[in-house]
Image (cartoon, rainbow, N blue to C red; front, side, top):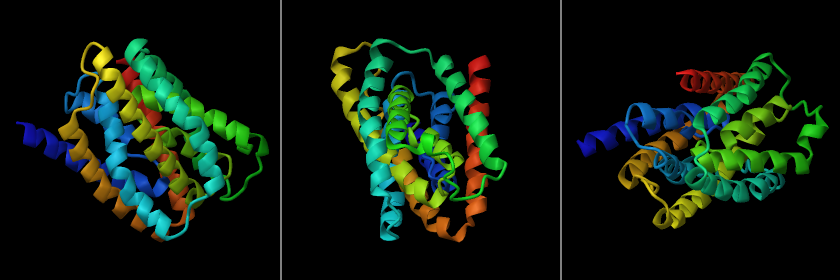
Length: 259
């Protein structure tokens, strides 16, 4: 039944956002396989539905972070300069080029796996000893690449950018709100782009509106709770959480690609 389908999505959105928000990772990165494997959302509709989750769930966490004045505006500007055009391009690629999902999964795993291991090895918080990676042009270029990936697969670019920036030495408390804000803005752009493309495409391209709202409302509550918990979690624990999430996502993608 539809209401059971949406209820399952609401619960999944809540749990995932609660766990991932303190580390600055959108729960969408784990929601995608849930939608595909458990909720039966067809492709490419799963992508804009996942982006809808980000749009609705994002404000819960962002309002909590904003209240604590945790936004690095310069870093956010660098991320948005790359991710906004990237997500629009990614949506066009997803619908009209039909990029191979397995290729993306393997590429993402190849990036996230080593970064997660690097974080777990215990790089000192706040050690920004890699200025080449942290230059604004490099950050913007990286944001564009993950924006394209977010537009194609709806995972939220912050889920990839966040671990990389933390692995380069940035503190989680600095990266988390900016990564989530970037994911939220680019997800809005992505949903709008898919809606504009839908009349000109074949197959199910528009979001599953009821499921997107249900998962988003669950994520809204979970994101608020997760952001509230972040100040109570030590920096080292947050870094380890982010490292584990990065490795877990890499593992998910490898398994999906080979099966």
